[in-house]
Length: 79
Image (cartoon, rainbow, N blue to C red; front, side):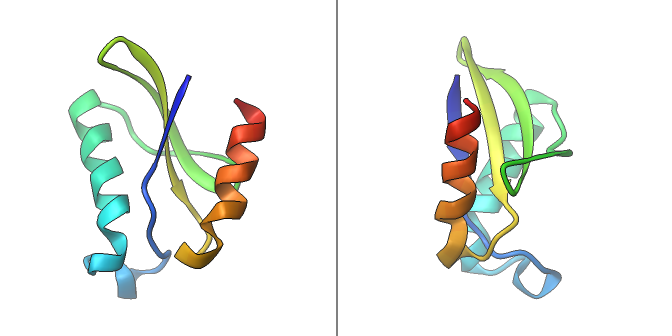
């Protein structure tokens, strides 16, 4: 299982700012793979998919960017 984490900040005020480029990238991958990032685990919104023959977990941490390591660590423990 591969983990792709898009970093960003939660909240509408950050939605289309450079700080959320990671969120936008993960959302685009999800769109290409025809999945919704609707599950919650490891303090992140997540989706499972296949990408180039690999099982992938897409994640958008629900923490602010500076605290995203907490979410990534929780997700890594689950994998």
